[in-house]
Image (cartoon, rainbow, N blue to C red):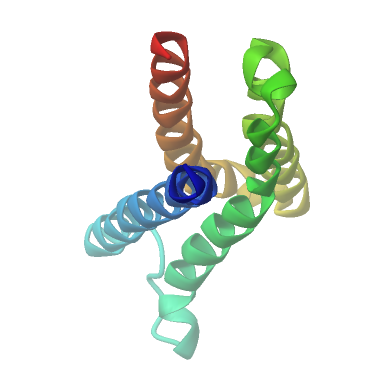
Length: 135
C-alpha cells in the first residue's frame, strides 16, 4: 500500500518529463527543417543555432510551469474537472502568452515553440481523466 502511494507523484512527474521531451524533439526538428529551407537562421554568424536553444528553453519554462499538476494529488482537485484543468494548463498558458508578448514581432515563432508542449499536455490530460473515471 505504501509503495502505491509513492508511485502516484511519479506519474505526474512522468507527464511533465514526457511532455518536455516530445515537445523539445518536435521543436528541434522544426527548427532544423526551417533552417534547411532557409526560413530562419540564414545569416552566417555564431547565433545561427540560437533557435535550438530558444526552443528547448521555452519547453523548459513550460515544464517548470506545469508543476501545479501535483495539486491533483488532492482528491478535491482531481475530482473537479475545472480545477484539474487549471492545474494542468493555467501557468503554461500564462507563460506562453508572456513569451509571445516579449518577442513582439517574432511572437508567432514563440507561440510555435510552445504549441507542441500544449498539445502533448492536452493529450496526457485527457488520458489522465479517462483513467481517473475508470477508478
